[in-house]
Length: 335
Ligand SMILES: NC(=O)c1ccc[n+]([C@@H]2O[C@H](COP(=O)([O-])OP(=O)(O)OC[C@H]3O[C@@H](n4cnc5c(N)ncnc54)[C@H](O)[C@@H]3O)[C@@H](O)[C@H]2O)c1
Image (cartoon, rainbow, N blue to C red):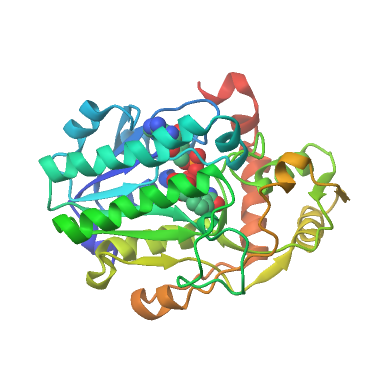
């Protein structure tokens, strides 16, 4: 599959972020000409350190996806677009819903308009989210599960996803969406819980503070290591059957949050965890238990995750033990 990208032109929005930078690294090694777009808004996951090792092999454009003119220019002549830029915090989407709307929905529409006007032969993969299912009615959650977002972010990501499907169906611009579950690994934002609670757990563990699990800690989740998500993005971009489709990503390793915290403490060889009541603003948008049925991705794309949770967490702990200061020191993050 990697050969499919040799000498192709690939644009990644959100390319200095967690998943975007891992994807960029893989595409560079596959011989693609990679351009990264990122706004580096400090509250989001973009971090120049994420691409330190490939900085000379990619083109970086510090631009906001809300800038229609810049996007229209950058989209020309690209073979692939991995559309990953997003506001990812569920809580922020509740306190600042308009910004979430502008980035996760309106900007997505203008990106697609730019494709319609300037590059209809591009292939697009959109990073959608399991959040749009809301509180599961049944488990595991498949793509036929009712859509009932519990927060503003889920609604706007749903709109972003459906604009892609619409432009595929109406204008023939090949686009598909992956509904990601909790993704973790080197490069994720760990200074706070804006991107994933796992980030702040890892930071606290490495700084000798307790991991705090909200609620009773019995909430079930599935997790994907970032390399597996990169595999899924690449296969979705190249697979003929993917266009116009949505695919859940997920894992068959299901774990509750208390056991996950205990696993991290064990792998780190020290530390502690405890359960604390949910802060009310988090409780209001909590989805309870969730894990995905990803059999459609397995059947149609031949994708399934290959990195086990323990292995992935070990790699993540090793990465932040070595590089953590580039993720939690304000002075160094944007150096
Ligand atoms: N990580 C997960 O668990 C997860 C789960 C479900 C969905 N997703 C989706 O995957 C995508 C990538 O997520 P990630 O985990 O890498 O998060 P991330 O925050 O690290 O990456 C998103 C990137 O987009 C950039 N960005 C945000 N707004 C922008 C704007 N207006 N213009 C240009 N760039 C902008 C950020 O700076 C950041 O680098 C997101 O769209 C997210 O919704 C992620």
